[in-house]
Length: 148
Image (cartoon, rainbow, N blue to C red; front, top):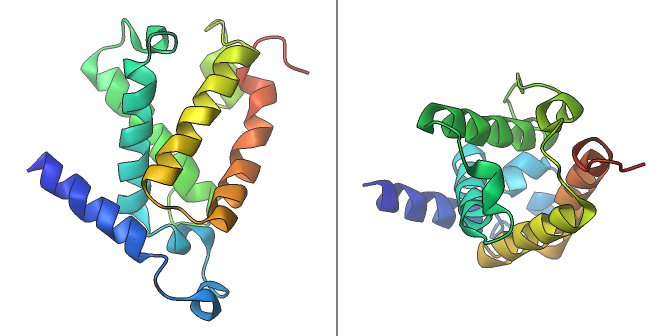
């Protein structure tokens, strides 16, 4: 059943782009991405890539199932909110949430590459990828240890 839900969400995500350029001009990024379920499906794929990666998977070790679900929900809510959706992000600020994790610039670059791969997998158009990048890029200074 979970697989079916992901397929439906992925389809909704892809369908969000079929409205054409004129229809997309009046829509928020949240709407153009396909809404909540689509953002959740992208988040699930992205987290799966991170957790399964030989270098970045270390950041997911030691968390309970409940904690992992909370991390996932915070990511969904953050993207949803920043993309103009109805979600409210109630998580901690990025600096506090990532303090002491030892995230390096190399880790950041690797994770953003994986996020890009996820967006390509879901056929997110270049303009929406760019807008998502503009949302995520400023977070680097608070997530990467020692970033300026």
